[in-house]
Image (cartoon, rainbow, N blue to C red; front, side):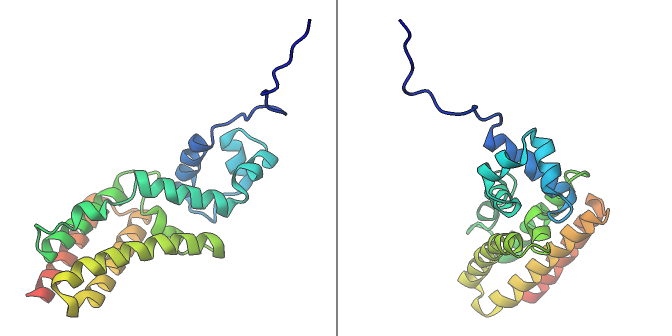
Length: 196
């Protein structure tokens, strides 16, 4: 007698783990930038064919959005942990800038900030996804400053955001940690002066 398993899935089983694929793609996008990575390179790195890629992620931008979600949970600067109520605003922002310098220089093969660099990519969908993460971070910084220095919240947030973008860009251009820290500490001095 022959029996069949009515719960057996149809077709071939998936040959890859989507979560592992997102981590691999994160590394590619971070190291080379969104625009420089092709779907062909992604599928080769993941060991899958294009139909499997599109079935899993929909598009390169769809994969990038998944990468950003993964990044926010695993590699993003922990803004909430740094902008603590037991610190002065100047101390907290100095800690934030130093943490940015450390993270942006931590991996010579993937320098800078995945999100900030993504805000400059050519694909409108991917760029908008990165901008959403960047704006959420700016909102958190602005809200933190506004609790104690409401009149300075906008300009200080703009200054911190501009400094972080510059640190990311300089890291990608080859600046090492000591140089990034010098810039971060100079910016922290300017913040202290602005709040004094």
